[in-house]
Amino acid sequence: MNNINEHENIITEAHKERHDIKKYNFRNMEISKKSEKQAQSNEEPQAVETPQPTMQVVETPKPTEPSIDAPALKLFETEVIDKILQKSDQLAQSLQKLQEQFDKQEKEINERVNAAKTEAKEQGINEGYQQAKQELETQINSQKELYALSIKRIDSNIAESKNHILSLEKELSSIALDIAKEVIAAEISTNSAKIASSLARTLLQDLSQNTQVTLKVFPGDLEDIKESLKDLNYVILEADQAIAKGGIVILSSEGNIDGDIFTRFETLKKSILENKL
Image (cartoon, rainbow, N blue to C red; front, side):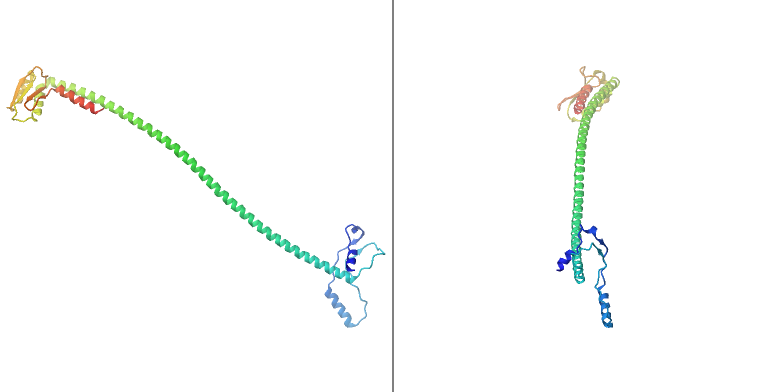
């Protein structure tokens, strides 16, 4: 019966325009109970008022519709309120769960984003390092090649310079020896006897004084050399046209010595120039 009355008193959206709907204010049940107790204690006969809802629903009266039962209406209101409160609690719990789930997902997303950022940063640093390392190695290898080429060129230039210097030394030595030969020739032309005497004393030092020695000299130098070597009793002087001016030849049992100035000079020159090769 209550369920039938409930459906009959519900205003659908289609019939909303036919009714004057106002806000409904619930009465305070505690105050109503106190008022009823005071009325009973005073034993004053009063008409019992049926509690009416403050929301007034004006609708077109229909003679076929039954009258509204006040206790049933109260029961209906209580059930509706309970259901609304239950739904509110359920909705609050659902919202709380959704919020917790959202917070959890947001936290996971932030962690993933931070992890992705860290990974990307590390990857970028690693890639940058590898790229910089590769570029630096390329530059170093290029510099090494340039240095190696430069060193090779320097070595080649040094070798050429050494050869040039040796050639110059040989040339200079040859020139110097030729100049020395000219100086010797000039000195011989004026002091041949003196030069021959000095050369003879030097060469005779290597021979024993007990050995009989014959010293051949240029005829023009004979008298001056006799005077210069008169203290050497074991030496016999002889003039020889084959001896050049300023030169001497020593004959002895120990061996013969060619003391020609220019012959000795040519031997010295040859030795010097060969050492420059």
